[in-house]
Image (tube, rainbow, N blue to C red; front, side):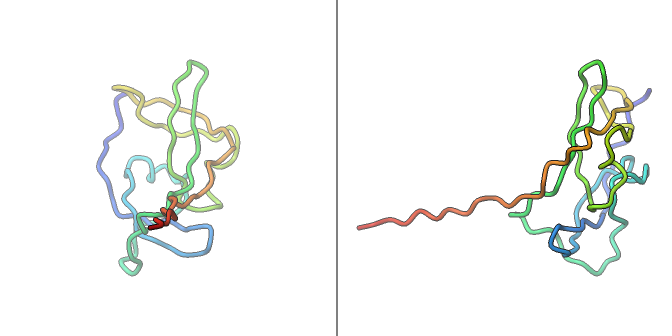
Length: 116
């Protein structure tokens, strides 16, 4: 199959603590309706840089794999075996969900204190 377009749109990410943030998302992926979230409503601010979105690994039997963001905790792609079309090299391919999301995380802050 031909590669999916890579244009990006403003999308809403729902964090584990209930906050909603604006993020950039690949339109061809969000159009499939399996990643959760919704189009940006124009009312929420950007995701903080120290918040790492939850993700999930998609793969196929030939060894191709991709990690994609999951924009809400009730997304269809979180079900093991759910499929999505994603870009693999120069083409798009149907990959299956592992059903094991990579949890939302926060970047570590430096807590080193210098003693004199």
